[in-house]
Image: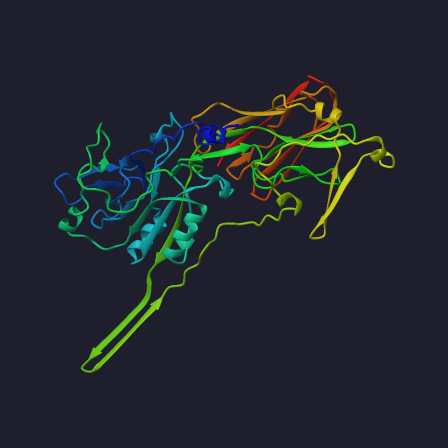
Length: 475
């Protein structure tokens, strides 16, 4: 092989979609939600001021700070003026309709009362990474919210669990018209009824994640936050231990176990992608508990108390993988074929290689040519798909199908199909079905979702197949 051609061939060797990822949306659609009768004012304090009843959706350019007015029906004389920093936008596959997934900006009655009593609220809103999701059902207008002690902690936790897209600050302070007018930058917000957005009058004011990373050698880095995946094999690889038990079935993994004679094997399915972004917020509530001051000539007394804050941390878990499973070699020689002479097999049914690592015994068996040709690489043994096809929304019910088949030239026995659902999927009890006779069981997994397991008794002859299915709700 001509090594000079290697740089030209490397892009074709990269797994995944070919070509650069689609550009992110030039704007982030934002949906303002609040108590019934709430009015949201845009460009407050300027001649271009306009108000819309909630819920209302607008488009905002990343990289700018927006000041809006919130007029509540119970106290219109006491408007609130939150500031909203837009730090990112959605970045998803071609054909993705960004308008169907706006970022919800919410104000609950309890939060409004806290602000009116003198509290300062900060919400760090991020797009949740589905692999780090929490198994809690939500809705489009009621996103998940968790408390944090400080803004630093809120930013740190949000960055660990996804991609920050917005930061909102809100307090009781009133603003003069000239202060509000400073946040009015032409070409940065598209209001309802407007068809086009003019170029921004000034460059972005704050850092924003509007440009995806792209490595010229490794290829595009596709976003993992807009879409949740189910199927395939992530983290610890699937495998069968010495007790013929399955290991490595992580949340979102799908497996098919089967036996050929005395050998127990496992394979996985393709991945299914469902693009339903979910926004989550960390909320910081800051309010002085008390203030006392007395000033006399030569004497100053000052005392400031702090309120007690409780931080709710997202549930976490720790996975401990078997030592053997952590030994991974990539881009190594895939296969070595070698025949042993008669003298080498004289006193052994099958040659074995035994090694010890940190007290763990690793046993490898010799595989003959006849066994290798019995398992050709002739397509998926387990295929997964979902209906209906997108677009989907939080709260929708979808149906997953798993087709298993025997592409080999000898029968399979003890076939078991397992699906460990991601935290964003909630299995609907009683919806599991199977074309062939099967024993169906469920169990919880570490992500707070469910492991579905179909045990198909008898033999699966060469060329035979079957389908299992179930329904799940998108969280």
